[in-house]
Image 1 (spheres, rainbow, N blue to C red):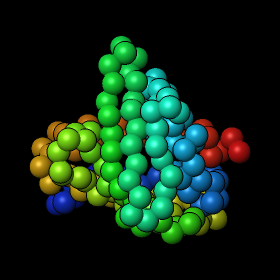
Image 2: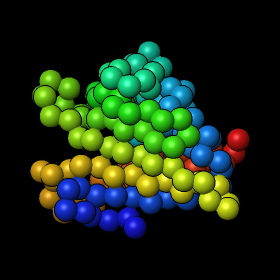
Image 3: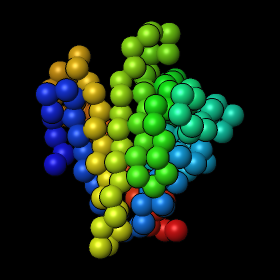
Length: 149
């Protein structure tokens, strides 16, 4: 199911690629930089520190089409190859709050089922819906990456 939950929201997406390819798209810096933000956003390699390992922090800067930037930071909480990734994320690096994102991958007959949950306790329903829509545009690019391999 994709939609709002009491704690935040969830997104389900299927890919015609094995779990290893989807996991690699989440955990390889060059792939992450290509899809994070969607097709019109750049994540320059020199502004990306992204090496998934438990308890390691990460950071990225999105460069928007108008030249404005968004700085992201977080921490990897759990990294289980080809199955599960749990990380925190915020676009307010100077603030202590972080939202937890859990990505679970399951093999299917045609590839991979991805189930993402994100905490968003302070978001309005409209903000949750907008964030779901944003993730979906990111995943459109992720899908191109994993299904082209």
